[in-house]
Amino acid sequence: MNQVRIYKYIILGLVVLNMIVLAFFLLTKPQLRHQPPPKNFRSEVIEMLRLNNQQASHFNELADEHKQKMEEINKRQARLLFPYFESLTNSVDSIGKDSILNKYQQLEMEKIEMTYQHFQDIEKSLNKEQLSDFKYFIKKATNKLLLSKKKHSPPPKDFD
Image 1 (cartoon, rainbow, N blue to C red):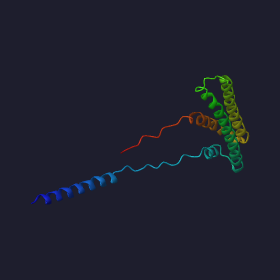
Image 2 (image 1 turned 180 degrees about the vertical axis):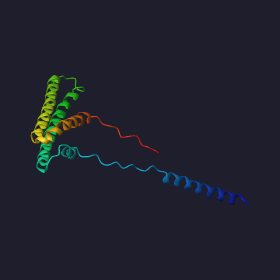
Image 3 (image 1 turned 90 degrees about the vertical axis):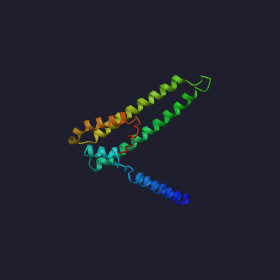
Image 4 (image 1 turned 60 degrees about the horizontal axis):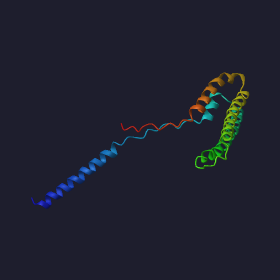
């Protein structure tokens, strides 16, 4: 056997070996685990409180109005924070840091009070049978409000 023929067999063997390795990785690739999409909190509340169509419509209106108010306050808070933090780069202390912080706190109190009023408005729209579920709703809603601020990292990739 001459050397050229030996090299051809070696090259052919390496190509076949590469194809086997490639096929192995493609065939044993972990499958994506499909999780059901998280439920919309509004629809969860509608089920939780057992709202009829009219109540659900009113609830959605209240929720939209509350969301809009919260977004507006958040924007106002952001506008306050920009000059506050920009004061770090300016040597002039012409902006009133204390007044900015007080205004920010006032807006935060406003958000809390609006949310409290929002919950009261929801409670007013319930009938006697639904009021028993209101306590559970408040617990779920406050947990969502207070705990959802933390950004959860995605679960680690699982290579089974």
